[in-house]
Image 1 (cartoon, rainbow, N blue to C red):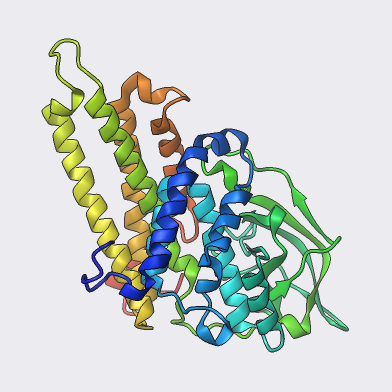
Image 2: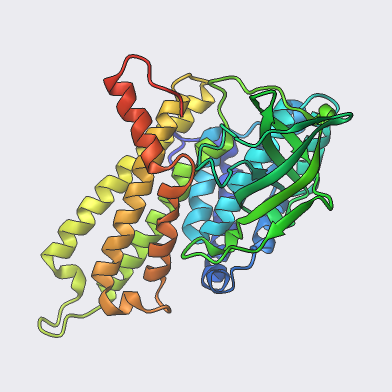
Length: 378
């Protein structure tokens, strides 16, 4: 959103950071196909985001950051995701883990994690468990008491960027209560190379194993406030929106350039294509507004933030899938080829509805909120 006068737009003073992200995204787009093919972590992209000051900007001023608004953060995620979604996904998880550790850890650990983010260290979320689905706030693995804290043995899955992480946000049950810890990887932590996926391949979200890993007592996080905004929840809708925008742009480019032999006119002149693209554009605009409303609520520290993120994530994920599917239909055989960006956007678009909270969990919460007096929290 470039109109700084819009009520949902980021503050005008944050415009330079948005411009920096847009400039970087233009370069990231040129590497997207190669990263998809190689499934290599986009480390150069992540370092560029850090060098532009975008990592540190997300920290509050009290921790040496700029207190970047959630509105600006969402627009940065959207711009990067439209160019190279794996980079955006890893960055969302990196900022989410770092922000949580800086906000919830006791001192002096909170300051240490904030300094680590400012200096270029990498963070990752090790939260989801194989038996727990994507209800990552409800771990099933129990940590065992130890003289220096607790020990954890088990596995966490879908840990984006784990292989380059210097610090992990880990959860476990402590006396039956879900608890967060900051953990620095050591030889008790291993990475199981299972990541060979349909889309979002460069996230390299491997399975992480813990073999008696120490969860230090001095790195036990305070429980988050129930309505406290967080960067992961705020960012996921924008991740899908960026993918949807890229898919729509690829569809439009193909429709304009593909000449129908029987008519001699571009595919873009066909009424069914125009109608389908109109529907796609309207729904994408609705998804953008929903996501922007959710981060506006985050900046207001409104208790409506969490319900709004579930609405936004559900809508954005479904819109991304539908637009990517339309791209395949309009692209035809040409879009089905591995050389076409259309098929890559289709594969990447499937991820949003699967990521926590999944589309099914979002629907359950939204539906129960409407139909029941006291819906369960996801």
